Length: 344
Image: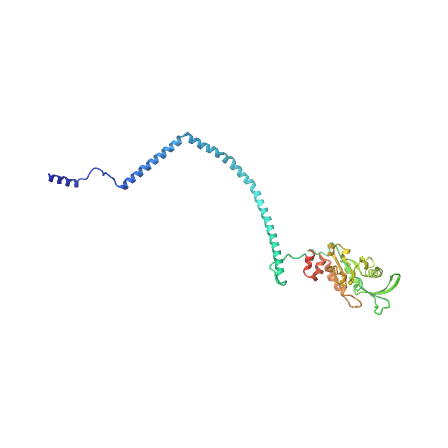
């Protein structure tokens, strides 16, 4: 019996077992489970889609969404497009205007800052030190177009009489001169007649003829009318017999007297302040134009020098002054650059 059992056990080793194993391997079991899960999900999605397509409520929902979007697509978007198309040029114009305004404001602010910095630097630096910024230049001394033939307003030249154009001495004075440029004139003061030797300064006639072409001539003397008028009449007759050279005459009673100073010729009594830019006074005494220094031209007083040429030497300068914009800009240069700040 035991031998039979041994025989069957040996045969089982050579014949394979046809039954599957009770427990499959772990990896094969997990793979089969995942495959089954995916198949179930695919079937569920297909069934849900089929159900939704067949569901009438879902179709109504889609239709309602389309109806809601239709006005936006058909009306609102086209209107917005045309609105932007119409307003776009105006927006460009407004941007350019804002840019120009901002640019001008920025430039003005920079100029104000430059002026402020320059003033500060000038107040703390040496007057001879150079400055980083330069202020705008002063006003022009002469107009841009200097056409001698162009009609323009003539300036006024006021001339002194004694020691500027003439020198006079009473007859019998040991210093009396004689010559072809002198004359004896009778002058009555308080009903008392006195003879005076009146001598013209060299080149006086030529000087008066030339400047009368450029200026309206006035004469302003600190002498009394009774003394001045006969001498002025003689000068006019010698210089031009056809017309009067001097448009106006001013005398001692037109002067302003100050104790310790003397007679001052105040131009503002006869000319508005804004017209002083066109007025020049020629005098041998600086006291005479002390109230209007920037209008005054000084000439050396003349007594008896027959070689004197001061009147001739003044002609080029006077001609230039007749062409300038403001005579004070030229004559005031004695004060330096401050003159340009005074008359702005």
